[in-house]
Length: 303
Image (cartoon, rainbow, N blue to C red; front, side, top):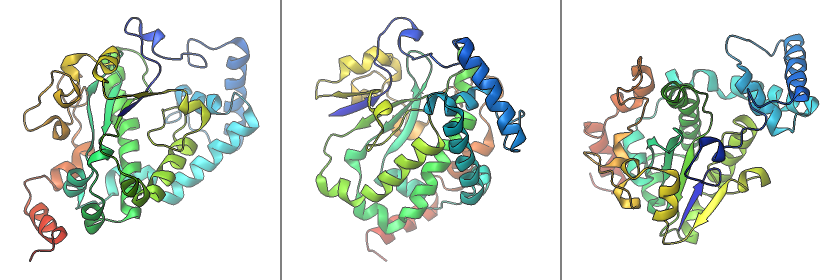
């Protein structure tokens, strides 16, 4: 089975595939006034920097709390505190993850091209998760940080590139979770990590579409559970040339779609991209690196 986490797909106009309520260009007069008031309150609390805090970002927090300023303020304040304490603001430049290629091997998760309205497609093959091998080379804490690293890369790198290509703001991804082959023991082994990542996604990255189980009611409404005959439904949201062949599409990237990381952020279609600073881990710890071979031998118990 596959769970495709996106708005209910319709293959025609992009606004039929997105809920644009509460977004710039689609605000009611009351919502516009609430946004102005929210900025004033955040400014007075010294929690607002117009250079880095866009209206799109503020509106995500307002929508998450149904435009109730006290609740949105609390959510925003807690998020800013967490970002400082967790080190989120610098994680793109200072997160070290030597086990990066091994983790990708034992738990395949990757971005691959875009859907029909230009959003990056994220594929999580949790059914291929090898729990024993994964936690022989890393820890829950480092996996949590790696998830936050990927969230920040999505927000600061992938989505801006996709937005430039589409010439409009994009702030969500199309997520495919491949549940084929998932066992209860697999899920139980990573339950704590999944629960924590899910909580972080909902609390600190609101309105970007949750990626994990244990989702709130709003996010659950964005999920379609597909059975074994899933290709037709996937192709309603994703063009065949953008969908990997193993999911019923036509794409067969050289070296495998799961390692290509191809999309507007690095395919040469957007001026100014790719940006080397966002490919630091891939550059430092490539699949061909000798560190990778040593980690694999250690995971397999060999000398």
